[in-house]
Structures are given as C-alpha cells and as structure tokens.
Length: 172
Image 1 (cartoon, rainbow, N blue to C red):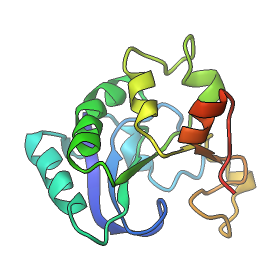
Image 2: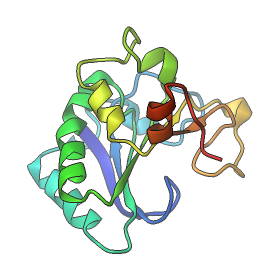
Image 3: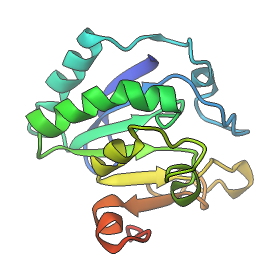
Image 4: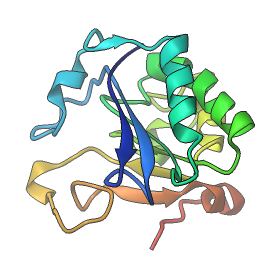
C-alpha cells in the first residue's frame, strides 16, 4: 500500500486533534473528490515500518485523540490488509486513542459478508473503529456546514453501539 500524506495535527477528520493517514488507491472516483490524486494506487510513497513507527510516535502525544484513516479508500481490500497491522498496534500500544475511518463504501451493503469490499480482515478492522464515516461523496449533496463529512448522504456510524445493537447507530 502507498500513502499520500500523514497529517500530524488534524482537526477536520474526526473528533478532537488527530493524526490522519491518507492512503492511496480508490475505485469510487467520486466527482468533486477533494483528493483525486489518491485514486491511483501507486500515488505517494510505500507505507512501511518507518511510516507505521512515525504514526505511533505522533499518536503518543497527550493532546492527540486518535487516528483517522482516509484516502483514497482505506476499505479497498488491498488497503485493509495493509492497514490491519497498524490498527492492531494502535489498539495494543495506545488503547485510549480512538480510530476513525472514512469510506465511500456503504457499511451494510459493501462491508458486510458478501459485500464487494468485504475480505478476510474487514471484520477485525471494523471491530477496532470508534467511528466509520460511510458513503460516497456526492457533489450535488455537498454541505460545508456538516461536521466530519462532505455531503449529507454520508453517515457517522457509532461502531461500538452498532456492534452492540446489531444495526447501524448514528452519532448525533
């Protein structure tokens, strides 16, 4: 997996101050995407052990709430497989930091068994998330007043509550 950038201080992509990883590779190609250069799976630089260690170092600051995974598309199966070791380390080494992920896929349709982005690591990756922001960016539904998303079709899913209830629970 490649990535385009690591933001060490980000207040736009999740609650509080966050570290954000923008992965490369996306097959959605949403018109009006804010980051179209990351559609190319070869864009940026390889995500390696040094990048992972750098993210963990950045996360280990008292004012950082957590990690946000964006793109590109973190839930392209090849990206899921590459992100899982990082997510495992964050959960193990920094359990008080939460993890948010952004996806153009729809949780119930695409990220559940039988869905087009579901693979052998999807359940474990979803289990580690506090919030999943799902749904493609739709330019005609763009709303700059929304918190943590670009268009009003996108949802902020409370993943612990969703797991407990067995159905999608949205954040207020």
